Each structure stands twice: as structure tokens, then as C-alpha cells.
Amino acid sequence: MDDTHIIPIPRKRYEKLMNEPELRLLCEEKCSVKLVLEGNNTVKIEGESTKVFFSKDVIVAFGRGFAMKECLKLLEDDYGLEIVDLKRFGTSKKNIARLKSRIIGKEGKSIKTIESLSSCKLSVRGNKVAILGKYDELGNVREAILKLIEGKKHSTVYRFLEAANRRKKINSLLWEKKQ
Image (cartoon, rainbow, N blue to C red; front, side, top):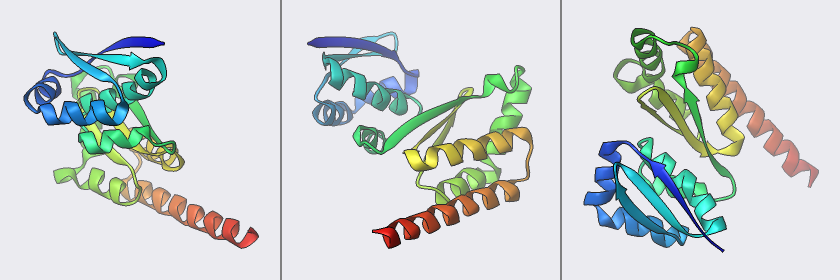
């Protein structure tokens, strides 16, 4: 059964899809769908219902600023996308800008550190923080972002992620030992 879904994406990302047809073709090939650039910065996904369903997150992630190759990982069973809306935590532009700067860090240091302590990628655009990564780490990275929003020290957040990595490693070793 064929289906369509329309997704709005930011103008710059729409233009990137329009000006770099190889990105669109790569997505179409990997997702087994047809992408139609509708104008008004919208992308129409056409194809079999299940293919359209799974390719929606790929286009949303691309719109949030991730590279297409990273977005296509969402087609794998163990990858997911989470979006944290900063408007939930601050309504004024000044407050949202403050939250974004805490998450990004000086010269992007905070984002780089969070990405290096996890297998996740982060993108801060507009009023949203997008997290793309393996399901088993998405929750920890979301929690780290929320801790930064709450005002926790960056070092505290990094220690939280390091502890999560240690627990993951221990659980993995215990699992291997059981088998």
C-alpha cells in the first residue's frame, strides 16, 4: 500500500537537498522511497507505507542539521532520534539563548565532550536540541542535556556520562560471562 507524508524542514537544509541531488538520491535509494521537493521548504515522501514511516525520521534528522550519512543510521534497528524542545524550559529568547550556550559550550567544547562520551551526535538548531544515536545511549544523553538545562556543572554531567559508560561496560562483561 502506497503512502505519502509531508515534512517541513528549515530553508537552508531544503536548499542543500535541492542543490545536492546526490544526497536526495542516496536517501531515496537507502530508504526505498521517492522524495519530492514541494517548495515552501517541504519534502514529500512517497512510497510503501512502512518505508515512508521509517524514512520520516531520516528527513527530520536531516532537517535538524545532521549529515545524510548519519541520518541513514536511523534505518538500523538500534538507532533513534530524540528532540528536546528548549521552549519547555524557557520562554524568552534570552533564556533559550542561555540554555543553548550551556549545551554547546565555549567553542563547542560541551557538545564535543558529550559526543565523545557517547556514540550519539548532537545538533542545536533553533529552539531544539536533536540527539541521534543508539537507543541504549539516547536516554543518558537526553538526561545529560536536561542536567545542563537545570544548571548542573558541566563536570558533573560529564561524570554522569562516564559512570553510565562504566555501567554499560560492566553489564556487557556480565552478559558475556553468563553465556
